[in-house]
Image 1: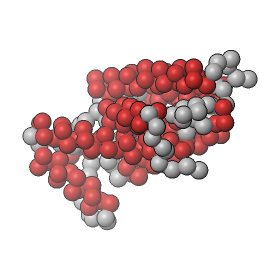
Image 2 (image 1 turned 60 degrees about the vertical axis):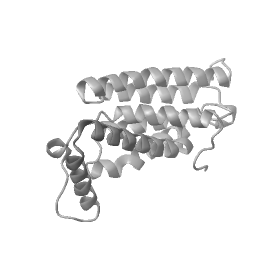
Image 3 (image 1 turned 60 degrees about the horizontal axis):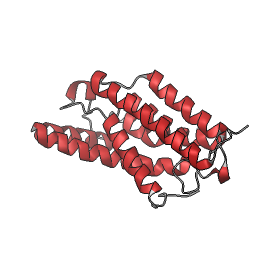
Image 4 (image 1 turned 30 degrees about the vertical axis):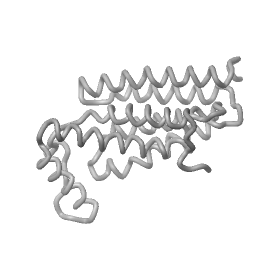
Length: 198
């Protein structure tokens, strides 16, 4: 049973809810250097509920020009795809478990079509933030050495990167999630096409 609201009103509610939750995530990651599971669970529940009980309108999704709820199946597929896309980064110690879970939670909000573009925008935002932070802190040699270790691990090298002991500077990656999400949402809502459609 859908809420008695228009797709546009539903979209505004979803965007406002997502923005509020992301502010909470960024605040926690900046202050405590972690993304609490309870916040991830809250995002998952909110995204799932809004996509199940919202107006369908052709199941175009949150960031579409014709917004509408995805339904349970597509919302869950978005969560699984978001998790799967960032899982290799976790396996090679380039991201933490909280980051992977957060992308899964965002995937349930935006769905499988949008989550691929969202992942790319988040990774680009993370790269930009890392370079800016590296330059401002003057630790480029150490950071580049860590990048070399990560890449050698990807290519089968014997040395492994351990972010707990070798990190030059722990950047709160929730900032990259918030920045990437904001830029991607703006791009889609101002006329940009999704990167992939299926």
